[in-house]
Image 1 (spheres, rainbow, N blue to C red):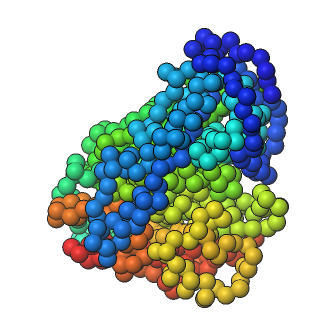
Image 2 (cartoon, rainbow, N blue to C red):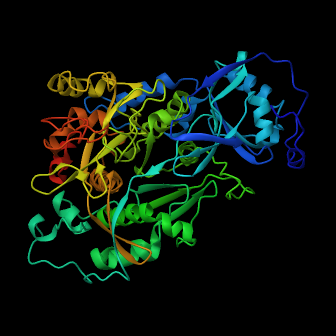
Length: 603
């Protein structure tokens, strides 16, 4: 443990408020370092890190009860979403918890430098790593992923024993999550995009006329899923959100080129969607460095913004860009990024806002086992708050089949090294809706692309139990599956995905060039756009928006989906879970049809 006084802390006014008391420290959490990471050195003690302390929420069980009731289409309270004030009142920590946690924190950081969430369930501040090591009785290290990227983390941390029941999580500590974007670029057409000014067809658009497996466009998606003739009526009152993490970009110029070619009436949307920086998130409009160009930074952002605008225009779009490294730290080859946890940083920012878009698209995942249970539970509980406020929080189900977040995953348990199917987070969270991907138009099948080994993801959580609203559907699938893959997955866990959308060969414009991309991150913004249009119809008819989708989906909404019964979630050198009749952990309930969705919500 570093014992020296950090000069930078004094200069920042982050010195002790009073002498450290004699506390009995006990390990609060240990988490295995994922096998993809290796320790390469000691963390730089003088670098600054933004720490977030989760204080135990006072009445989360009551909040959850409210959420189930207002999301159940057969309950008298269906659609009666909670307000910001009502949610904050339910998650506000008990006075005892707040007092004890703050008393301890004030021994390490001046009170005026501690920021609080509106409900008081999160306290955050910036300190040098050496000071954080002292207050958590731990040692941070530099860990290098097998792809060469670095993180500063620890495998274990401690708290004074009397605080264990009052603090739910402290991060960044043991979470090795890296928020993988799911888009897979497989073709690059050199030079400027050479595409028709307008996608042409004769007469009324049909799937046969406007859908081409060589390059999927908004007109194809709108025709396939039946939104092409819908005219939004509540734009403004209804909005859609898009989350970017750790450097992803939403380029307006590329979006304008895309819309000019593929949905010209929506081109104004490229210049009017709102962008907000969270935690120093980048709003730059080009991948400026050779490293960014080489890594394809902005491909995910281009896919997301172009797809959402192409499908849901003129519904207003709000795009958040969440950063990671707190200033003044600038990473280089010798100094790794000292980042925040992007999901937690983003969701805590959004929860502060009085208005939140009614649907939010997230195209990012990571292996569930890369994060400790405490982190997963606390982030998931924050998603529950959004859901209780009437927000549909949507995530892609991953691109590695049953093998993890990316194709070719190791399929090794962090606990004992045994072969296991690897579930993903946040899809495993029971308060979000997870989107799988399909390919083909008649019929659609579970997505697989042999060129880049992309396979739509699905599985069962090892952290979160199976919620009641999906128990019947999952039980039916497991009965059909029998003992195949026995011991490779947790039968009693939250199962995903919940539904699917086409996800292969999307046409996008990136850095002025034409690209084709695959991924559940293509399916996710498409699904978000479709549900945004459904919310538009509900608002126009004076009805509440859908909010948390899953209880409605598993009880009544499933009738609006075309079942996908072919294909599987390939991974771990196995076929993985097969798609079958009814719900399955490959494509969920299948793909939506807008006319049937309207009927399913009573319109």
